[in-house]
Amino acid sequence: MLLIYWCMALPERVGISSAWLLGLLFDAQQSFILGQHALGFTFLAYIIIRNHKRLRVYPLLQQALVVCLYLLIYQAIMLLVMLLSGTITYTWFYWLPAFTSMLIWPWLFIFMRDFRRRNNIA
Image 1 (spheres, rainbow, N blue to C red):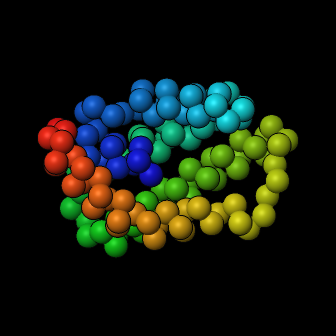
Image 2: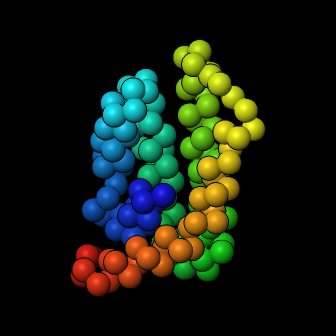
């Protein structure tokens, strides 16, 4: 969710290459297939950067719904990679993080916006 916020707030500084690098680091740290999350984070960053001007003017509740949709797409990509690699342990709980992220998004957005403004990050 922090990647989504920074891609939306500062798309010229946090972009696709940052998402790819973060994904590779996450894969290495969590012992996932190398490139699995890099692919997902890159796709997520691309969608956010492509629509960042539109997303920034949405009300927080509508932003939360869009974030949930984007995270569902991200999780579908991760599920496809796990399915192709044969490392799948799928239950309906797999989709739960997207919906809890939707509930957390308004508070995270407000907190990060205030943090960015307090520290003059532009």
